[in-house]
Image 1 (cartoon, rainbow, N blue to C red):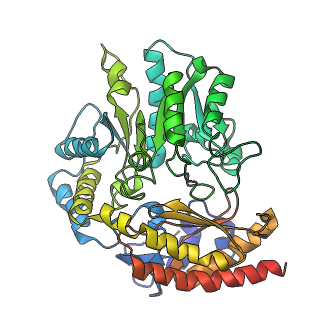
Image 2 (cartoon, rainbow, N blue to C red; image 1 turned 45 degrees about the horizontal axis):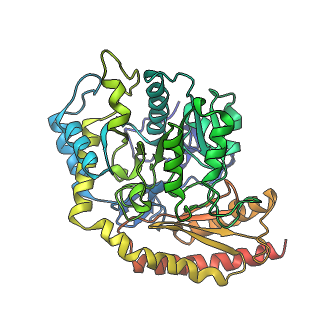
Length: 460
């Protein structure tokens, strides 16, 4: 039996965490064998502190969430004020003022006719909702065979069983197979490693080819991120999104822009679709919607997508208990208002080039192969041989990322993401309030760690 946590005096949080807390996407056995659990207790601006008083620059925005920065009492107060007025009521056949206000605000910022907002508790739920909407949309319009989804290789779209059909990361899929059939994949936009026979100008055509291979009468939607996260911030080539939009229109396929990460200023616009100039039928979002101060997501649909659901007794048979939670909606409204009042998106536009220049300055280190991304969302790809672009074996990647880099960066006070879903990369997504001072601090940590990593890998 665990000690009562209501009596905090003398609690051993390390021991309690190792014994009782199941961490997400974590090798729990390492903690069971005595590894330290990082325990973050406080945040302010771009920084967080652990339970030992050590300060860290949060260059990942707590997993792409805390866009407005840590420690904003005004954002938290909006939730507290709402809790004292109406702590909770469902949006299952009911509404409340904050959900109505937030839906209207999101619609005013979203591109084109994306005017209908379905609230969720997070990004995976938003994607799950979009996939279900796409299937029922086609059924209501007399096309019941349109059930398949086309996504990109290595792409991550969530961990629900439905979202995993679109996720293109093998190791995330295999433990839970089989899935509901329908997930199909095409090459991603990794311009550093183009597939044989492909050029930047032909990547969009792989979507058309896959639709034709599957049979247009069976394809419901294409789902893609504006800048693909997994694999390391793959940006689209010029004209890619416009051609994908044309292909979707030609085959009566919905276009879902998965913006769980890429919305709310991350790419220097409210939505990533605006950065790249395309009009989706559906946007999925979460994370920066509340800057992580409350758990909330949304699916934003066009007038055309909701149209068949407005006929007669048709009903979208789907929902979540906490979708549109009053406290989450109040926090989201305060977060968006602060972003507008403080010019956060303009700040990203002004300083994204500073972030990129800092990362580009590391290209002289032999292990740095590529730097890519947009806005405040960038990655460094690590290579064994820069001339040939040779990557590391699985064992080498394990030694590089988890054997050295992750720990070394954290110990020096930098939180970022060392990942090998695809080729080894380090990802950066600092709070949108970060500027040159934080970028200089990042460089001061990154350079010696990457130089040491390069020496270590040369000696293997």
